[in-house]
Length: 233
Image (cartoon, rainbow, N blue to C red; front, side):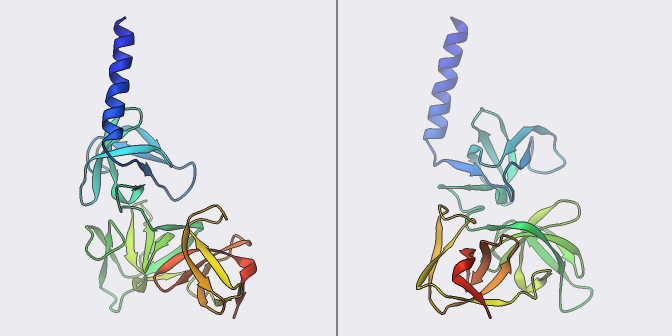
């Protein structure tokens, strides 16, 4: 009887907590990826298990870099804001992930300069750390004019495109050949629409590793377009 009452109580708590806020999800660069659920706001803390790409969570306390969250199975811990996406937040929303990693290098005007690595895709977001000129990084994706990058130690954050030279920097432009072609968040016709571009629009091609869906950039928009409607120029 006590076990039944405990299960009923746990169900009620889940309904109250998750029903009180917009559903949010863990968003990682790659499907099937996992992430430590930390016991405190930093990598120096232990972990309370893992969360996986697509897991539902509720943000209990919002921080500038780390947020306290509740998982769907009632575990409490901390994850970085850049891994949270959903109806109630702007953390990872708008980030388009590359289908393969690109190598990159931090590039500044002066050899001894440093550039801030930020918690979000904007100059007003919290600074995680600063990287020296010529630091080697992996480029995981893009959000507007900001690259999502990872350092050799695995630290991830956003840096403005003007400070990053990537292996895709020499890519060519392409012209839209269809009358009105959708740009999508992921390489699939069922994915959400970023924007629609008309025939003749010129885009920058960022990644062609998926032969059917190219990752492109137009103005502040980044997303995937069906390659049959694009012609390199």
